[in-house]
Amino acid sequence: MSTVRVWDLPTRVFHWCLVICFLGLVVTGEVAGDALIWHFRLGYTLLSLLLFRLAWGMVGGHWSRFSTFVAGPGVILRYLQGTASPEHSVGHNPVGALSVLGLLFFALLQVVAGLFSDDEIASSGPLAKMVSGDWVSLATTYHSKVGKVILIALVVLHVSAIIFYRLRRGENLVAPMLHGDKELPEVYQPSRDDTASRVLGALTFALCAAAVTWLVKWAG
Image (cartoon, rainbow, N blue to C red; front, top):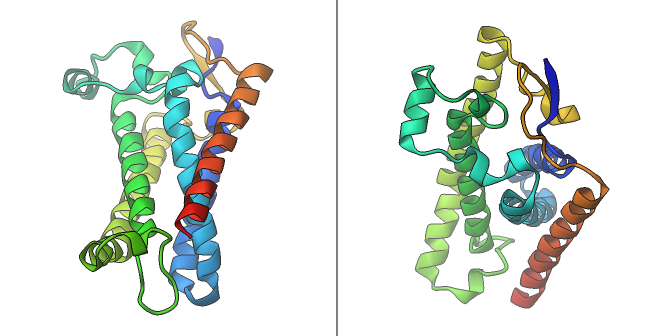
């Protein structure tokens, strides 16, 4: 067995911050009222995290890059048939990659819809005044009724898959996302996770957060 650093620290921090933001957004969205202040703050944080992940998917650790886990239909089919390459079980497997991409896409769509939403009572997204009423209505309906349900369903499916792999295949997918390492039968290329890469991750997130802050202030 070989210990391989699969998830670099920036990826792990992103993952758990995403979990916290998602839970916080669900709670504050349901409570409403004064909690909407935090709903907006968490929404901006989530947008910063998503932009970071898109960037980190190109410059981050080896197994965090989209090029290492985004697979075509043929690879997915072979994985389901049990004939995929062993390296597809190192990071995100081909089916897990679909879950990750789905979560990222619909989370981003949900945040963007929130930027254009208006509840016509006490709160509106910073970009709502820049589009027509029809677009605002569409964004509001999607954000409050459709997108929320889709995301919750995807998260439930994601968690269910983690439980399935733990109980049926004996594979712990949570632990590597905590400490970064996996025990594998072969030696694979590790993800870079040194001081330089961590500083790059911090700077990348800072730039993404600065861009979101600028957008909100510009719109305001």
